Image 1 (tube, rainbow, N blue to C red):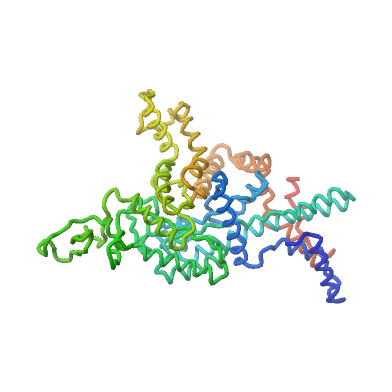
Image 2: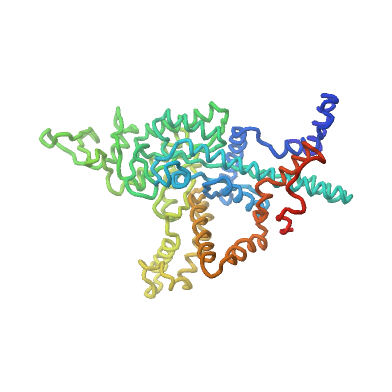
Length: 532
């Protein structure tokens, strides 16, 4: 986009061409409005953010310290405030994304009310949240630029040319709050055609990256719950192709697909894979089936299924549900096959759902994948479903024990107890938690770290704190001291909530449209003036 002065000059030239009927159009006002609305459509956003993500992937390949991060958001305001906070504290949004969690859509955005993460919520609620997030991020752009424009006007009124030039430089170098969203499409909400149709909706809403998992769509479970059922590779690859076609149809040629495998914790399959020759992909999938080799028809009962595997007849173990069971302990091998197959058939990134955050475990699988696909990279769920404190205290306990250190003062099963909080073990565990993302990106190929449900938990925690004080002895001090005063002291822009909601932007627009006749909300009687 051209600089501020060029935008003004271009509109001034256009006004001149249009003649006297445009005499009341102020080129600078029009340029400001144009700069505040950088993206005309959300599809423009998808194309823009796909380029960012591809660049970040290349940066990571060159230097694993350049990993990316995101937090899951369930409302546009939450995503907006995250990006405003990042810019406030770090001066840039570089390497920062948003994650759209299917779990949070199900739990917080469904018209049915709170639901478990089983793809029972409305398909459209996923696309609607993407669109909402980007609407709020675009408004954050308009809000921040509006402050710069007002500061520019103030500097001009004071005749401070140095300050005015500095502010114009800030406007020219403005960095948008619009960042990539990794969008969870679950298992596609149906067959490959349904996956394609929904993927188009997500992309049109602004998604440059779609994450899809290899579970059965109508049996889908949360990645951290039991009862997960996977599909044969060919079924999953058809959905990956469906997502790619959706990207290409809409002109997002560098859209990113994350192929998620739940095989580590999934012991069941609904289908026996189709196979035509020994060693093909279907045969490899079926090789993991648990069952018994039989030698005659006498070993077959009514309703049994028998397949040929390894040159022999195998009767797979079939449950009362009609599902087939995989061999115990085969999870890691199935994960490696899933990941290699996905990368060789159109996926860009991997997601391995694990039961604990353990760098060694993740690296063990990724190193096997990289023997075949050297640049394999992961998106990893730093999940609130993990008890991070207990997991890392137990990891440190095991390390200390293996090194011959005295661990008799600790109960490994009870390490979550508060009495351990100040111990050497607890401090070592906290340091491993602090460096987990850096260590895992260096050692286990993790390009993107996300927390799926952080704002679900922070909303509950902050609400509990306020409710305890407000309805208790603290009364109004719980809000005044615990919320508002902290907003003021920490420079949280929402303390001026009218401004954050767009009141000042609206006032300026009124002046653009009506001049001195504009009825504005920001006069002397606006109580927001109490905040300076």
